[in-house]
Amino acid sequence: MKLKNNKNIFCSVSAGYSSVMMAIKIREWYPDHNIIYAMANTSKEHKESLSFMNKCNEFYGLDMKWIEAEFHEKGVGVTYNIVDFKNLKTNGEIFEDGIKKFGIPSVINKWCNRDMKLVPLKKYADSVFGINNYSIAVGIRADEMDRVRKDYKENNVFYPLLDRGISVRDRNKFWKEQHIKLNIPAYKGNCDMCFEKSNRKLMTIINEERNLSKWWDKMIKEYGNVKLEGKQSYNELMESNGVMTFYRKYRTIEDLIEMSKKPFTKSTDEYIYESDLFDQEGDCGSGCVVF
Image 1: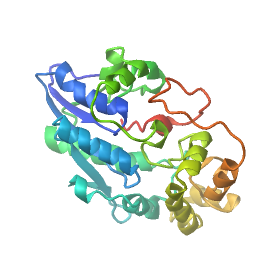
Image 2: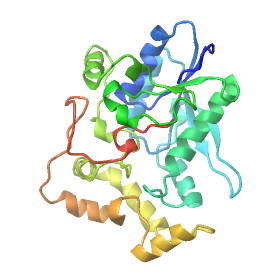
Image 3: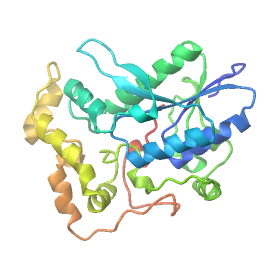
């Protein structure tokens, strides 16, 4: 819930149409507030997403800060760096550093959102406004009520799009009227082969841009059998399944490639179609919600 009598707003941006619409409109909705914008780059965002966000940042004058996590030795928490667009890491460097420390992330080991996005972004916002001296704006729409965190009131989180009844149809209409376009379908947004995406989305991506799977395959082959000190449950799961992977049922990239060769219904673009009932996935699959 937005803090009363506090005019500091931290706008967390993810380079998707809903999130960026919120970033553009929030100054109109809260004209007398102090608003800062930031996006966390994991080094595995689709490059078109980064390009789109940079164009929007410049065209709409957001003065958005690019935040990148930096991992350290065991016992030292993640820190952040403020970088410019030209120097963004885009080859999985940050993500791989996290894997070396925490292992391969999955639905049961989901450190990636926490350590590459939530913690660095919050540390940045705290450094600007003071610890928790701000409200956090998140781009969830009115048709995404199921994605609202249960404890949002206690964590100063609010949802400007939802509060104004803005749906996927309203969002798509808004972007039809803008000069800047995101030139990839929604299912390729966020981390390009995120394990939270539905199998259908992953198979569609493999068929359309096979090269995107190479990094994920490399990580499984390099770290899928590396034990972690003090992580007994992680090590036991790795041993019982033969390898640790990102994906459901411990599927490897080879498994997904084989699945993609069989007939299946291609994933559709929610920026064009308003719903996709066939995709069962986690939050990051439809939009990586940080807060």
